[in-house]
Image 1 (cartoon, rainbow, N blue to C red):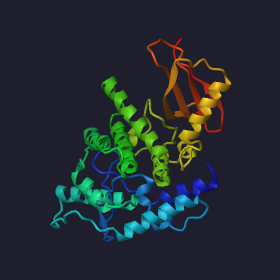
Image 2 (cartoon, helix red, strand yellow):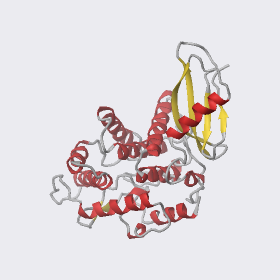
Image 3 (tube, rainbow, N blue to C red):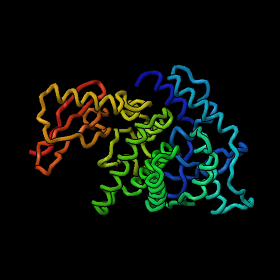
Image 4 (spheres, helix red, strand yellow):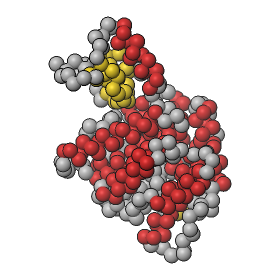
Length: 334
């Protein structure tokens, strides 16, 4: 990782908020409300996004200008945020805790998204979102929260809060996976959850907002988010080896600003490379392009996959486009 990325990692890793619920490695979340008083309710706990209003991340030098501007904008909007949700009655308890989480979710959306009407959208989504008072170490809570966000995206594909909700889904699914360590469970369900994680992690890495991409990389590099003993086992999902002492390893080296090759660049390279290699692509078309992680090489790559236009077995052309420019053919079937 270059020195600029390391500076950012060190700067935004202080004062980490810890997640809700109980269980090994889980503790009460904390954050700051619009009045500046500490309250429970951090949403994307144990991620960089929860620390952007900390003095430690202000006046950063040596990081890209667009990211510095976004961090400054986030902090500035946090200073003017005023919740539109009903105020609580002052009593402590599950309802007060849940309201604090809704207000924190509203705040995150307002601070991250500078779009017309965002204050109304943020309050509306936060008031309706599925949020749990406690997860109690089980996967049902975070998965229910993720499912609501996913359904919202299906119904509102052009929503300006899409980037944040992609992060939210990745965060909740990751927390759910950490509760299932050592439990074989249903294989089909396991694969569905892993696929959901990959899908929205890739979406976050492709997001045009550098804050979304930075947070996705930071989240992926954390040794755990919710349950410490469950953070090192994520079979089938893009991850990297993180030491148990909490130091950031290969995942941090993925690059805080997402892939160095954009999806469009990778697609152009793939099409030119296939033509250069004289690939027999008559009857095939590009079916998908996905950002994946090579566990052996400890780096990301774009996987471009062709598919037959008519049903046919095998020889579906594919290419791996690595960030350093190396290209490896990956044809499917016999």
